[in-house]
Length: 443
Image 1 (cartoon, one colour):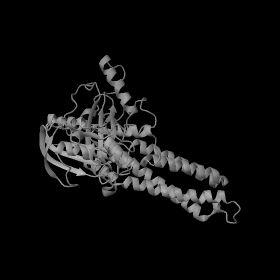
Image 2 (image 1 turned 60 degrees about the horizontal axis):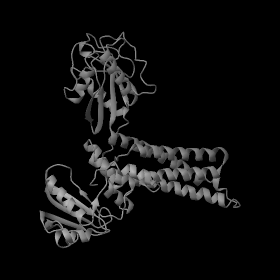
Image 3 (image 1 turned 180 degrees about the vertical axis):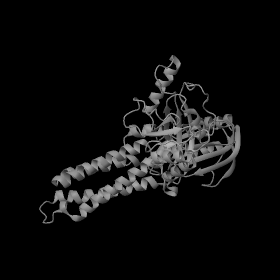
Image 4 (image 1 turned 135 degrees about the vertical axis):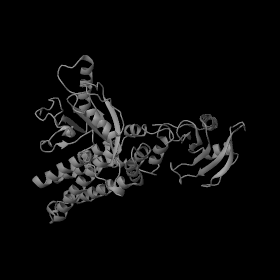
């Protein structure tokens, strides 16, 4: 971790030219640096027009200066923002001027890291800043904003508080075994265990949907050559991304396209047709297709509806893969085909059945639009929740099976610790370093 006693400076606006560029300074020397670059310290929280100069008094730019004294700022430290013209050289000259009088260049995510360490926001909220910046759909942006506002953290903290109350009850029973009341058989304890179990199930489901909102849902399209995989991808994306011909084996490489299904970001992956005895180049495309299957959230196996006698599925589809059979080219069938249970009938050419396919993709993703109730979550959040839930389940089973209060108490402690990793109540410096390294320099 960087030296947090340093005063840091960085551009808070994206690289490149723009109408306005913002340089942000944060730390103990902010006031002294402001006096040198502006000639005086601006009034707190008031936008003031100032001339920006370097240490030698040379004019660099002119614009608005905003001063936020500690602790009433984003980082919890004194912060100065210089809003000038957005040319790269102008921004760099302001940063160099701040460095010359005592600041150092900020590392990625260091502003948000300081906000976390100064208790301005918790770890999940800090991560939500990056999620909001990188949101790929309007629904994802709204969900990230809710996480930034504390919706996810509040749900985690409520569950953590339930665990704390349980731990108090159980540890009291262990510490005072001579009491006539059998606390471990108390109806209140059993009721609280059931409430925690329900709360874990609900939060894990919400977090899974939050992960889909943040990371999107990867769908790999596979099938035999000339089944219409590329036509389907083009139809869903609305772009002529993939080359479509009547010749089998046209697609030789992996093609990717992002689409938005009612706020759900879906990455479509078009692959080479799977068949025996391909040529050398096509064989490499098939190898890549099978590799893509390993990372897929869902697999669409595309079949030619005019050849229903071919019911084979490639044996290399990963075990446990979420597989949906889709019969394409229904527009070429003289009579409506009869598909297997759970399969979909579509025509990539006419668009028939695509609304049903979009609905199925939403279902496969476990995605339900929660409106203003949705929040984003990350893979590490899901892993921490899974570990917390597992510890809770082990302890609950130990109590119900053999009234092992000591085991329940220890498992509740570990469950509580796992939940604490989400908000940063319990985390290591290494974990913090990995998280904040994902941020841009000026956040």
